[in-house]
Image (cartoon, rainbow, N blue to C red; front, top):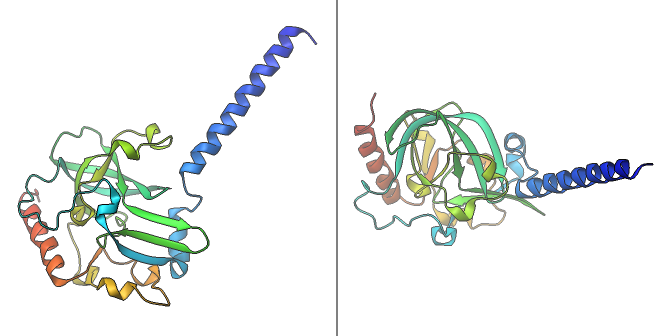
Length: 231
């Protein structure tokens, strides 16, 4: 075999090896668990919705915030398209933007870094902050956003543009239409039990609250945002 042919084969082999390694690294940044697996496995996924916000290293603690008008860099109205990727510690959800109410977003589609951690180790577990739950498919929301924290970019998210996160999950999303039973007050103590609570009991909620006080706080902000939202 000629040297040029050997050199060509060597280059091809190296290229294939690099591609395989890159693919493996990307998959390591993404959970093997798919979003579409959740409904069928929800009865086996332990649920804990009240992780301490201070441990997030990214979200603001708004428990003492009285003036919310300066909290958000962007406010948009939009719907989930149904495309989601489960990453380590979060879920990347694609949103079709119907209207930009605050800030400058020019793209028709954006991604929201939903603060939901899904672990599939020895026991499957789904945890989040402040009672937050998934954006429901094909339902219109007001989303209150900021730029994605630079620490959350990785080999996978760098391949996508227009990724945003919530300033705080508590004031993250507000459904334009809802039923009273879409929300509930459930004490944190209710989840500190044995046997544990499973996600199938709670997956239908938009959000849950640890007290009536926090629920009222959320809906006060909801009402404020609805006043600035075009019909």
